[in-house]
Amino acid sequence: MRALFAGLFDDAAIFPPGNLPMGEAVSAHRARQGSPLVGPFVCSLARFGELASVASGGSAIEVSLVLPGPVDEVPSAPGLDVVAVEGPALTGGGGRTAYIEIPCREITATRVAALRDAGLRLKIRTGGVRADAFPTEAELAGAIWAAVRGGLAFKLTAGLHDPIRHRDPVTGFEHHGFLNVLLATARALQGYEIERALVDQDGDRVAAAVAGIDDVLAKAVRHHFISFGTCSIDEPVAGLRRYRLIPEAAL
Image (cartoon, rainbow, N blue to C red):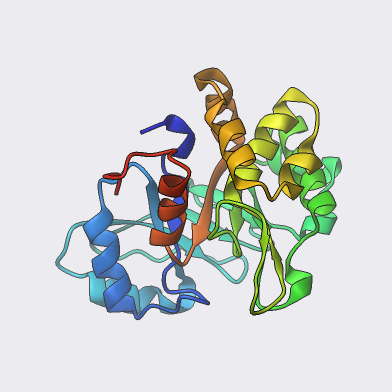
């Protein structure tokens, strides 16, 4: 498995539009434990008690906990290892990795520098239930450029099930593709054509460019683009298979 895709998919199965029941989501996540593609299980603070109850007695689960804001203490439970926290206006993660969500349009070099100096990471929302939740390619390119130039790691959330940028035929929303984002991060490191990488809807061309990222550049890309939350693990994995970027037997 290429290091470019290792741990790329954070398991957000209980979030919209997937909305998988907690028991099913935990069972599916445990079945995938050990896969090099899958990151932590994403859970909101409001449902942490439910997760603790459902997960009790089974193998340990790494959790990325979504917080509504600063909290006095991050909860804990047997069998759950909270490895990261994410949300708006957090001041830190209590020794854990902490991702601070900032609207894409508000990500500037100054804010990136402040996060970096505080030992925090950036969370960028790339979709949702309304059209205005999807940043334009220019806005996302600017955010990626600011993060890379500022030496900051980031994760993305929402709207990235498909590997390639496309328009949803039902909602009409323009979705970014996660392969486009990997390529755009590589281009940011190289200093050119970031927005062009994001807007490209030719799947074969984007996949070929991603396949051409060598191991040294791949390591640098993933140093910045850590992961993205997806309510479906199967869909992005199927996309990688479709473009022959991972073996059929992967996952």
